[in-house]
Each structure stands twice: as C-alpha cells, then as structure tokens.
Image (cartoon, rainbow, N blue to C red):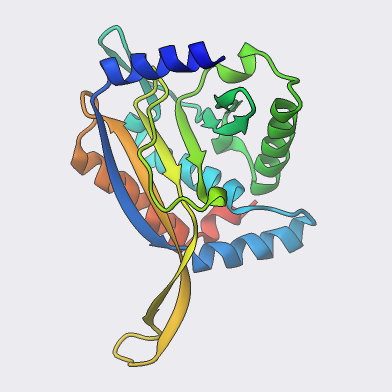
Amino acid sequence: MRRTIARRLHESYSEAVHVTATRVVDAEELFAAVDEASDRHGLDLSLSDAILLAVSETLARHPSFNATFEDGTHRVYEEHNLGYGVDIEAGLVAPVLADVGSLSIAEVHRRRTSLVDRVLAGDYDTADLRGGTFTVSNLGPLGVDSFTPVINPPEVAILGVNSVRERAVRAEEGSDDVAFRRHLPLDLSFDHRVVDGADAGRFLRTLAGLIQAPEDLFEV
C-alpha cells in the first residue's frame, strides 16, 4: 500500500499543477442545522455528513471541479462521486460515496459510516476506491489548522477540512459586544492546468455561503 501511495503522490505532483486556496468560514449555523437534523432523523449526524452535502451542492454550481483531467481531456461528470479520506494503519485511502447529490443527510450519514467501518475493518476492495470525481480529506479531528491536500489523480481538486476553532466576532453589526462563534478553515487544492484561482475563489465562496446558511441542504 505504501508503494501505491508513493506512486500516486508522485504521479499527482509530477503531472498536476497544485495550487491551494484557503478560506475560514463561520460554521455556527451549520452546527445548529446538524443538531436539528439529528433530532429529526434520530441519528447522530456529524459535521462530515453536512460538509459532503455542501460540497455536492457546490459542485452542482461549479461543475468544472467535478471532473478528471487525463490524456489532455477535461471530463466533467454529472454524478458527484466523493472520495472520503480514511486513515488506516497501512496508509490513507479514499473510498468513494457514489452520487452524493441524490442523497439526503440521513442517507449520506448511513453510507459514510458503513463505508468507513468496512474500510477500517479491512473489508473493502479496489472497487470501493474507484470512480471518484472529487475528494474530501478531513484532518480536523487531529487538531490540524491548515494543510495542503494532494489531488487524487485524475481528479482536478480536493478539499481539506481543518479543526473547528472559536473566534471572537461582533455580536451584532455596529455593536461593541463580542460573541464567540465556531469557524471552520477550508483548504482547496486544484489543478491550475484545468481551473484558475478565480474559479477556486468562487467555489469556496459558494461553499462558504452554504455552510453559513445551510437550510436548503437539510430539506429532505
């Protein structure tokens, strides 16, 4: 596995032109929406479930990122097949959750937890790792504030999710009162051969808007 990881990382850095853009997003409303949806569905939903949904909706609005670049061809896909980074003893793998755009928050949770459990138990094969169109890697639980995610070839982008931190902000506009709100740093690595920095900025702006106002993500 380490040889495979080394080969793919070398392939990624040898071929893709890596650039990383960072944005810190107020996630307080997203946490509230996750708690409300957990109560409604009777499930212990997580921030990861919500992020996957938000990423899928962002990809629907910025389809050039839901793509691969191989043999000089930029292929854009209709389904959002999201790789999800899982740390196992032998190294990092990214099993794929298929067609996330068609799923509710409860369905994303069930599929993600089932897939992660199987991977951690070693009950998976190469078919579970194929067909991804975009990848999400979450190092937040390990206390990481920022990192440079490596694109999973032949995909064109990957989102790094970092540790949630409280920040002091104005309680209300024009007020001197201070409130502490949870913020989420995000790192988007993209292949500059395929998409530009402005495209990445717009992608992160859309994703930030969905995280800050997540009501539409939890309709089903």
